[in-house]
Length: 458
Image (cartoon, rainbow, N blue to C red; front, side, top):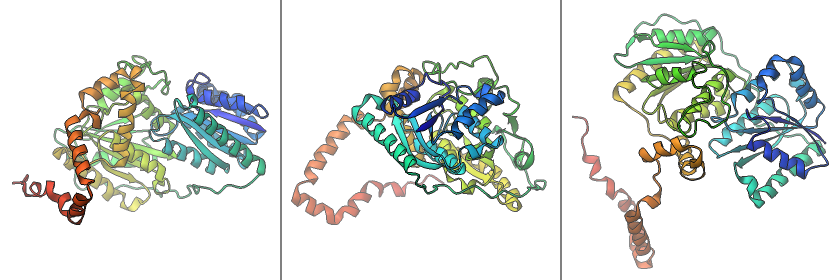
């Protein structure tokens, strides 16, 4: 069988992900693996139509496609996403239609599910038969059991592709298009006072541009607007990890991104991100913005800020993207003010006014809503890995995590653990348990009964 591998790492063949691909090629010598690195070579792939056509031609002549990629900020890297955008822009979807596809990723399991959902959605949109995902931890290839599991995964992929069976879609096509938004002038403007607001957008035209202008006009003084389409950004994250020891990026001094992010975004009180949906995500330019912010590595750089999103596009049909945006806010420990889309143009003025008003009120009160599983569990993944294996590279993270008390492991509280162990032993005695269980509800609320009488508001 002829299999085209589409590499999704900016590092090309010198990446952990590609070692997994080479392992598969070693174990399946009876099949032909055609390997391309569109993420690594995106500049030339986009510029040179012939180079792009070679990749598409190999896809067209193959029976299966393997999407092989590392995770970059909740999904794939911006270079890979740009290649996926080119497939649609150059009307090459027919080369993928009816082919079998599978996804192979490497990560530390921080939102690997949203990355795989994205690729599954892309495969469904291209009319492919998606056979499954394999989300590997970075070091899984060193483990015999995981090597066997990877072989089994690919055997299943080959078997399904050989059988010619159809695979059910997981994601229906995104079909609805918002109507034209015609804003009215704000009747009232919200005074932001000393609170600084910045709007970061990837466009100033169409509905998105009008949404940006309308929310900016609803705030006094008017927020600073940064258009990342015209911002000097030399390229996407390279995955070089030079930022690990001291948050010094390979692009430092070479473009305007880092100084803009530090001076504008990180120093704002209210941050509004505005973008247009492109397929299953915001634009690849927006993804480049998010990826490049990784010069801060795994550190929260927007804590306590008011964060909102303006999205042009049918976000209600793209739950995976909504979860990514929500998770981004929660992991940053920012307060998610709102996510406003242009799906109901007639109601947009009121929604944008509400977003502006809420952002200012929350900023004045320094309000941050408690994080849910998305932010809590995500930070625990980073906590564990930065404490152990990743400490070698991400030394800056380790210093910050240690200083801010992120390493809140249970074993750091020996006296509490001793008390819990003693209490658990006593509670396991049958006659004690027999007395406790009928009164468990009362025991559960005992620590809180004196707290409910505390007055904070006078």
